Picture 1 (cartoon, one colour):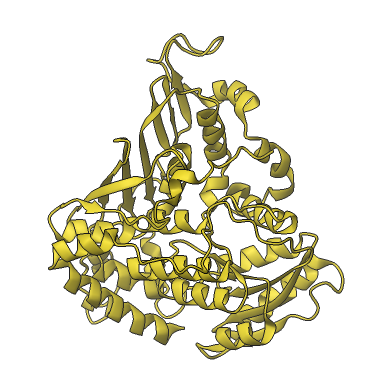
Picture 2: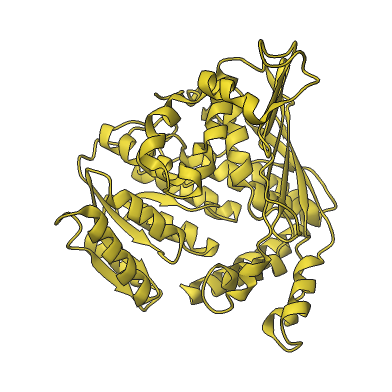
Length: 465
């Protein structure tokens, strides 16, 4: 997988860099929608046939993939059938955990594939799983998801779903042609506050949403210590060669759902983007590594902070920021402003016009801290109330387990997933579009319509109970 990653990365980033010089062509391509074959099926609201016993395979269990595997293995109506990774110790470790969590013979026949970068392909052909969870480096997300669907499996892919528009279109086309789900594993949509804000927006508590702010600001410089194996061994090259918002979906996914983006009400129209100078990674490398170390030989191009502004079809705005370098506390912003009030995160706080009865006197005063308890009691999402006890401790405050639980639940019941393939591509498209905007001095970039116009007829995400 490392060789595939290196080869594809060089090819794709070279194409991207060359394309930036032809801004008109890029804009034309971004809006161009390849014709949908007559045999293809639109996947918005798609419900696959029920799967009573879900046979699941996993590609990449170095970190995230393993935690998904362990949680899924403890759910009834599931069977872990295969694990693929470059490293034998990874597949062995997670096989043992699956067997232990399964408490019986349910996961005792797990096939292991490791040692060669193409073993995952062999696994798909031999095992024919119902679903595949993909948690590898970014360059492999698209080819693995596409092949999984072609081999008859629903694909569940870590974020971002891909980092080129070409790959996103191929994912969409393959999903439609095979009628297989391809869902990006955006776990933040299942966080307690994000779920509560979604519920409050649906109930009209803040009126009409007009503006949102989203971010992924997380100092991850220490990942550079993973020099030969692990996230830092491949992400560091992205920071060096790409300049834009490389990781937009954790903050963007929830606010897009608040606004019903890509679902009947509105969709993204254009994006402008700017990056600060690139300083932090270079300084970190100089401070922590010898002058001749490979990190000190990189010319870091990616600005420490990227700020992008999205304009929607209805004229609403979303600010999206990304920074994995600067020394500051973690935040996703998670802010939604409406005509009647505002919901905001980090720290969680609420202000409504005229105040909140019994809590605050006006919208000039934040309701936060202990005063929020009354709002949680009134507006907690029904899904959180139902699943929080069984997902506590599953990772990221329980949001990981809630996401996997919902996937299993939807597949068991033959229901549409909470996130469709078009949303995963639309949210991820901020990556390449921001790179193009930055490279062209902030020129607006049009979003592709991965639905080919069908978003207007796609039902909003329900408040499931």
